[in-house]
Image 1 (cartoon, helix red, strand yellow):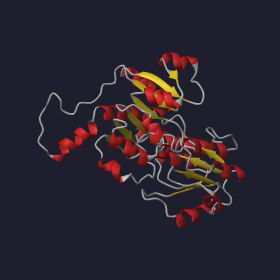
Image 2 (tube, helix red, strand yellow):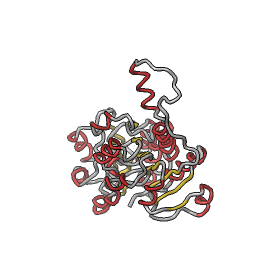
Image 3 (tube, helix red, strand yellow):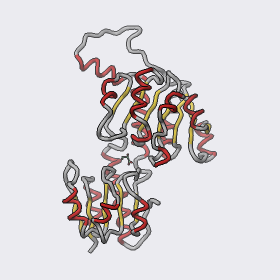
Image 4 (cartoon, helix red, strand yellow):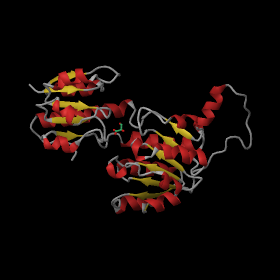
Length: 318
Ligand code: DGY
């Protein structure tokens, strides 16, 4: 019998699917699993189904001597030491594709919230302060004819570009390789060096994976090279941005505003960001729809089913 340990709550259909190929033990609480509880179950686990809040490193793997597979219920896998898994012949999978639309929707929502000052407006109403319609009240920026610069033109970047086009934006991007010609033509998308993209875009959206190469990709210099009327959106991973430098840039007017779904030291948010009106803050909600989270759990489970049945993983990493 294959022992499957699920380290956090996932939608039930995923658990049911896992149950078709093994005996499942799942942590069923919104609080993180205590390490001693996790390790006690990992001791007999053949498969671990993990969340992005799990650190799958040597300590995790040491606790799981018979582990064959880690199925991460996330597209990002920076929480997993893939090299350490490979050294121990542990297969790693993630959940690409199924959260593309939800994450692109949220990125577009942050573009709109930031440029139209919706967080600020909501706070004003909730504060109970007196207000009245005014010709110059809380003016934002329109998107028509503005350039969206996308850093990381994978599936989510492309899906965001499609949404932004319908708001009249033009698309520029920075990516290691060019997107295929059909997609580039459809979007009218042009490829740029990072600094050129930052210097020319009205809105910059981060949609690249987090890795040592992208750590603090957006640092003080990068922020300084952006336009003072530009906005930064991050739905990728927090540490891509130097949060202290972002606070300074938002404060001194180096950029106009930001919309953040992810944070450098998540779940801690830089305390100064909380004081600033020109930043919209949401708690890592990119894939947070019922449909998407269910699809993520199912894809993770399908990967497990494939491997336990002797097949190849559907969406392997590394
Ligand atoms: C992911 O999957 O990497 C998102 O950040 C959360 O769903």
